[in-house]
Amino acid sequence: MHRIGRCQPCSPSATATSAALCALALACANPTPAVTPAGDANGEAANRPVASTDAAAPSDTPATDSAAPVACSPLDQTLRFDHVQALGTHNSYHVAPAKPVVADFAYTHSPLADQFDHEGVRHVELDLHHRGAAKPIEVEHVPFLDDNTRCETLGLCLGQLKAWSDQHPCHHLIVVLLEVKDELNESKLEDHFAQLDAEVLAALPRNRLFTPDDLRGTAPDLRTAVRATGWRSLAETRGKFALVMMEGDAAVPKYKGLHPGLHGATTFVFGDPDDKDVAAVKRDDPTAKDIQALVKLGYVVRTYPNGTVAERTAALESGATLISTDFPVEKPHKPGFSIQLPGGMPSRCNPVSAPVGCAAAAVNAGVP
Image (tube, rainbow, N blue to C red):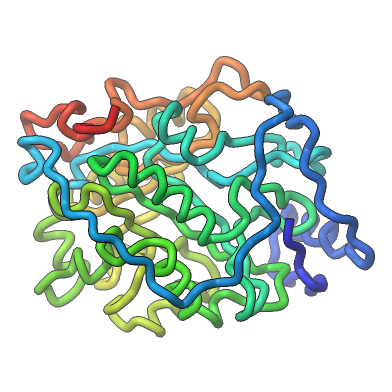
């Protein structure tokens, strides 16, 4: 795995947990090479592949694609993406370290394609690290301590998603959550967001992206558009990807500074629903009182229930568009627990916002 060149001082505002991890990571004067685990710490199969270390340098050449929009269901013009409820994974790339220093690191997700084919996943989350303008944006959790990954660069991760998409052109909109995690990095991605846009467009052709410009249309801003028409019809978004940047430190303001009003942006941003540049809202607590109201207004809402039956139930009933979990299937370290959508194939009609006549078969039409 790639490593940071040298450690950086920990932030004085870090939480106790993050400060402890930071202190451990800073003990890196003579780091040893990353180890591909011989067996997962949570008891999963030892021979699961992890990403290659031969990552190519970032390309400035946009990807091209001649694929035409696909008509998959008679309801495609009626149903919108905000009428859907979809399951996804938190830290979707994650592979447990051989010897986790924190119990929360002891989990492994299946390869991305397997998550889509066998675990009901339709949105993912990637943690981004910047190593320098001449190097590709990397995907991992915590440098040195928890850096095993299914796809070690943003381009490789998006390439794996596109390869699956190419084989399943009828899939509804796939959301890719992007979290900037540069706390221990010398170089900060927030200072190189033009590189982020370039790497996204090098991996995903523009016609396979659903962007803020596509949602806004002729409306004056995203808030007006989403409250008027929601997240557009399934007909307009099938076979495409929407990227959403997580809130955090200076990342979102700086990205909005590069793209005022998010004009020309490759990614949406999470934020306050009263912000005119916001069409997606993060409510990690599935009991948050405003989730249903936001969904009814047309927003995409993401929630992240913990590993309890009570929060699983709350998330499913909330109507949140995106339910993120570490447990799309039962894991050895938490037997007997998983989150799946009742009646999902794998996604389902949103229990709060979907119109009468919606059917899971229509949402998932054309994808076996």
